[in-house]
Structures are given as C-alpha cells and as structure tokens.
Length: 275
Image (cartoon, rainbow, N blue to C red; front, side, top):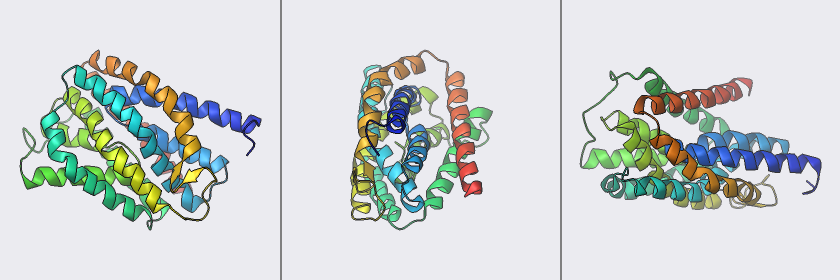
C-alpha cells in the first residue's frame, strides 16, 4: 500500500488515536493495552489483506512489542506512588518468562480461533468478577506461597503470550481472588507487563520467522509499522491513566475495567461466530 494514499493515512490516524487510548488504559488498569491493541490491529491487518491464518498471531506479536514501552512507563508511574508489590514481581519473574516462551512456541502451530477463544474465556471471567463485585469466587484471604505461587506466575505468562496482552487482566483476577485490593493489583500488574512483553515479543518474532503471508514490514509476527504508529501516543498518555486510577475509588475502578473487558469479549465472540 502507498504510504501517502488516503487509505494508509486513515489507518495511520486510527493507530495513533488507538495508541493514545492504549496509554490511558495501561495506566488506568495496569494492563499493557493488548485488549485494545489486538482487536484494532486485527482489523487493520484485514484491510491490508493479511491472510486470515496469519492475521491473529501477527496482531498478538505486534501487540506484545507495543506493550514493552507502555508497561515500563505505567509501572514506573505506579511504583513512584508506592502501589507496586515488588516482592510479588520478583517471585513471579522466572515462572512468567517461562510461561511466555511456552505460549510463543504454541503460537507457531495453533489455529487463529484458539487465540480468540482464550481471549474471550479469560477476559470474560474477569469481567463478570469485576462487574458483579462478588466475593463468592474468592479463593483465599491472600496469595499462596511456594510452588502454587509460581504456578500462578507460569499461567499468567502462558495465557498472556497467547492473548497478546501484558498479563494485567489475568494477574488482576488472580490477585483479586486472593484478597488483594484493586489498586495494588493494577499497579503490580503494570510491572508484570514488563516481564511478559519483552520475552513475548522476541518469542513471536522467532515463531513467525519465515512464515508465509506476512507483510513486508514484519519481522516474524511483529509489524514494524504497527509498532511505530502505536507507541508514540501510547507513551504520552500512560501517565494520565495512572493519575486517573489513583483518583478513583476501588469499586469504580473495578466497574470501569470490567465493563471494558465485557465490550472486548463481545467483539471477539462476534468474530468467532461470524468466522
């Protein structure tokens, strides 16, 4: 596509606006923004005639690359406010990275519908929990220690890698199911995005290396144009999202995040049914 054509300029403008919204979401909810990035990129790659079998993993891999600077900015802002559980991040670091690498390997062979179903299931469960505010699903008053805590870390990395997100949705629900307040879950999840996005992006580059149907700008399953258009506005607005999060009550933050996830889930349910 001609870089100066009206169609490409419209795509560029769409990605810049989506990047600004992604930055706000990253700071507000402690997520890398993949819940917005993946569906936007999925539609953009469709307009660019990327084959269906390549479209979703390319959106996921590009999302993980975009999440790297977004998560770093969000994590540092939350950390400056003393809201991050650094001990938990250290305990989860290695299991999360291992889970991410396993997910990236599976991404090379799994059909596109697998990514969509995983996205709907994980984000849908989280949405119901947050909107209802129920405590009936709570598993314990605090997170476990030892092997089970590391299993949680591996699960976060694995599912986040398949979904193309920073892991905030998954870590948020795990932490909230174990009695952690939403503001701490959001802040700590921003740091988890850093642990997931770096190995995740590398894994998707390797998983997509040499795959047919990729656009000319792609390195494996990462689109350089997608990254370059998303990242600038994302970084600029991440700190705004952090300020918004710390200005909201815990219940208001839960309702906002849950409603957002529900909308995204409906979009992917439609894609699965229509496909």
